[in-house]
Image (cartoon, rainbow, N blue to C red; front, top):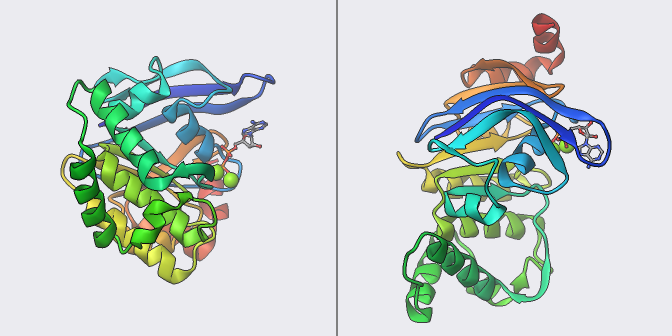
Length: 251
Ligand code: ADP
Ligand code: MG
Ligand code: MG
């Protein structure tokens, strides 16, 4: 699904190397988690994959279903099936949540050469998905994320994911700032979207999210590289002993 080889990335503004040779292969239908201390480059990796400005790839490659995504515009990456859920979802005053989602869904369909969804069809689908995810119909009418609680913002991202039906979903610390109940709702949403043809990359600072979203593979990132890969037990090891032991052992 996603194959990253020897990815090196520096900031455009200053001569600072942030990713220093990331190797990662995510198979179809699998959930991979990336953990690692603050500042290790986890967010940078997700930004670079989604096509955010300000970064320069100096070496390496990244392919989605065999296609080079680093050469694509952000919207082309989305049309190819990539979705990034942000650590801090943005508020968009003046743009209704429903309008936003319908525009996004139809832009993606158009990019794929598919017919647009009619207003009636869209309404039917979004109502059903919102209900499934326990999202209040009222939230659909409000401006995107404006005045939403932390939990509502994250749930809204899950709704976006459900509507866009991506193949490769990246969640960057989507658990930060959530209470236990909200985290459970987000996890339930992700688990409901798990399928054979869809993979997840769950970036998290804490093990607790991974109690709800059981990963197949866990990676530890440190100083711009993936330094250790293992099963779910690796996350428990981090929870118990912190990163110190693992990073010491790798060094
Ligand atoms: P993580 O998500 O693992 O906490 P980040 O990817 O956010 O790590 O950051 C990795 C490193 O790159 C940090 O040292 C951070 O300060 C630095 N960094 C990232 N983006 C910028 C930027 N725009 N300007 C300066 N430094 C940055
Ligand atoms: Mg951080
Ligand atoms: Mg981060």
